[in-house]
Image 1 (spheres, rainbow, N blue to C red):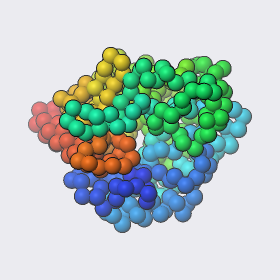
Image 2: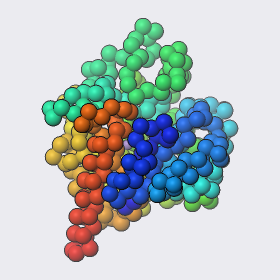
Image 3: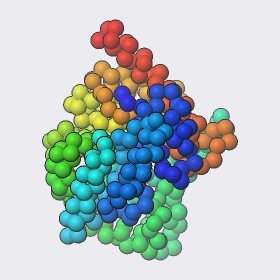
Image 4: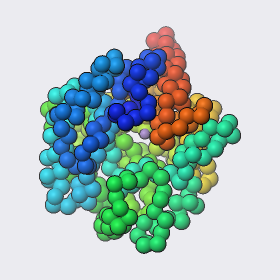
Length: 352
Ligand SMILES: [Mn+2]
């Protein structure tokens, strides 16, 4: 496995020098943030990221994310232009040495939580999702409180309402068809450039606000991989996103898709499943619902050799900053991940 760490560019409070000092750290996971969704990234911005990363002694090989324009998900005629732009981004990133691109196909709302600083018993804070709080929000009502955290702040309330309204006629099957069209448009370019595309699961892995969500479970991941049956069409296995539903056996999914050679990137994170939602917890197995050693063992035993990163962390030791993306708890997560992989790899080498 190749250990990596998400970095939000020059505006990130967490510095590359800090990231470099985490034991075993190899790669930075980042993106160009200075262009609107759907447009082509400038070569200057890409090389700036590469230069900074390499100067810090880290590798520039993984992008998270190249976002997918809503017109592609909605299947609008303008999607062809956005797919061409997407292919151009793949080419430019490949020229700069990128091996793996993470993206998602969630309509309108990216990851959704109801609180970003929920206090845990040990005095740390973390991100949580409580169903009853989500149910109080109706994005189509003009007087509704549209302030759930984690949403794209570039939309005004009216724009958000408008784009949500456009999805009202779109079924899950329509979204599947639009995803297939997108993959058929980009995977040949990715294959040509030697770039692995790695779709992130929907977070949480169920429909919210009546919007379709399809990258959610084993059956749908099987269907996804068959849409374009090419190793460059693969997964970011996000343990926390899949693991917030008790229906998903993450250990089994890690083994199955690693064996197929279709996992290119893994987000390791633990969640505590609750009757009314879930809470993000420290990475350690005993802190949440997921068997983190089981997941890592399944990856190792099935030949996984891709990128791994600690996912969201809690806020600890008085740190403030981007929710889920402070330094300290993610660094603790990285140290734990190193331990799990060392144990699993030695065990596998000794006993198979
Ligand atoms: Mn993730």
